[in-house]
Image: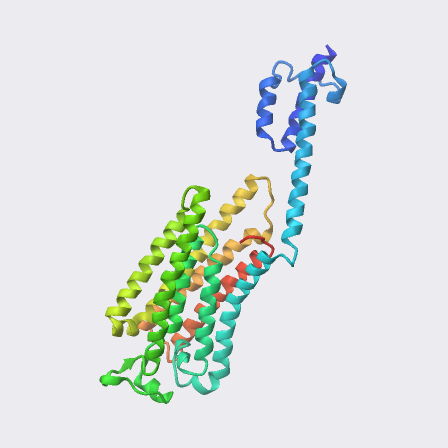
Length: 383
């Protein structure tokens, strides 16, 4: 009778211990071997007894041994996780340092543009209406170099999944923004002591900057397919081991080749139209892509938090709050896009500095995005 009364208590203790290990399949095995008591559910329970003290039922002794093994496995897993965490926090670790520096390059590129504009502000700001027009000033060298550096860093940091596809496309667009200057009208060119537009045109990319843009775009048209072909060769080599191409790899290749073909056709056969609108369209497309990346991060954050909760982890307040920051960045960039479109089409006339501040807020949104990414993934080994 005593063994019969002890059995429900022992089985309950085994279930509690197995729950601690999160071993659902082992719990199912317990239910098959020792179903939960029903008739004796209301019976008084005896004091808890260790399974080792009940040799009469070998099944309980076997399950106790299984619990000991599972606990050892759990301790080993915790030890491995601790070692991995210690490894990822090692400042000498090259991959993590590389990712950190690349993100800092993105922030530094934005800071360099603002610094160059600030250094030339006093002399040129009253002559030109936008940040893009600083291309025609001594700040132009920093403007181009910073954007090219940001494009290279963005390509290396593209990540995984949807974010990879979007950031790879953004990395293609940034050099066009850098290499093809915004159009300037004759009044601006006269203020900057540049040649006026040829053939009686009022707005153009003046000489010799059209030559600079032609050489830069020619390099772009050669470099992009080269990079895509190298990426394709690497993808084919990876496919031999994995057995298939990843979805993001196929999307990246398809969309990037489509962008390249469109730009190649536009530049080669419609050169004047390309110089007239290439900078604007590339800039708008770039900010749209960055906005989508921020939205994706805002949507992905809560999904990751729910997954962590499902896995028994407790998300930090920072992890819960970051999606709202990404929503704010996305809203800021959407506002920048709408305001820029309204000023460009003449729906809003905020004054001569209007577009300058729209571009400034766009750059700030881009910089804040990478600042948050850097802060969020500072200790991540591979991200």
